[in-house]
Length: 313
Image (cartoon, rainbow, N blue to C red; front, side):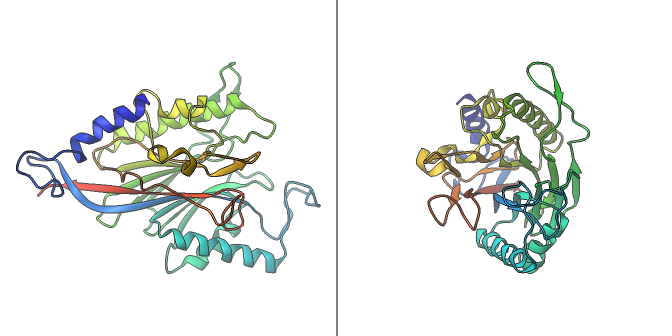
């Protein structure tokens, strides 16, 4: 709650009130910024999109890695491309793609819509990795898993479960947009200390980036495998940290995953407070095509819109 109040107060200087005599939709007198354009961001855990080759040596029925036939692989890539196109997003974080072949299969079907992409490959056999897709070229791509060791609360050392992927792109008006794609440790054979460490270091990296690039819109999105109020989510959002943009929706509309018959919000889009812009109120949307998932996944996709500001001439 404190983080939401902090962000609301910070952004009210930019977006909530116009000076006396000013058109509230026209910007600020003396100042700093006026609404310029909107940007849509999406995150989607596509659920174990493997290719046609067994990398782990254990791909039988019931094993983690599954091998798709060429026809099934093509059909899955087409299904995902159609779903992503439907978001009408400008930049998308994806989770659970095995490798570059999987990413290429999707982006090749999005050539006229979202042709640019980067994979956060961790290099283990049969891994499921994160990726970022964009309508505009990726100007910079950074990885953080190898350079950012993590420490659990008990003092033991670990790493990000998957790559913590960073991509810099441009909005339609030229504003720099930085998106971090994340997929924290799952609760299967749970390691909550690792997930908390992932959140703590992610927060630092994202806020450091926002401090270094105050004119950029700095966002983080992904499957964080924890719900609002949990220790990892508090580590991200508490005390003026990151704003969880779906927090203004009714609780029933925030869920992105169904566990034991109950909807839970475990996929998130977060923003660092900078003068570059703000989330559009009530714009977050969980995409579902049934009671348990979207486009062949067991997760719902999540989108949110952001209003980007530009300096007043």
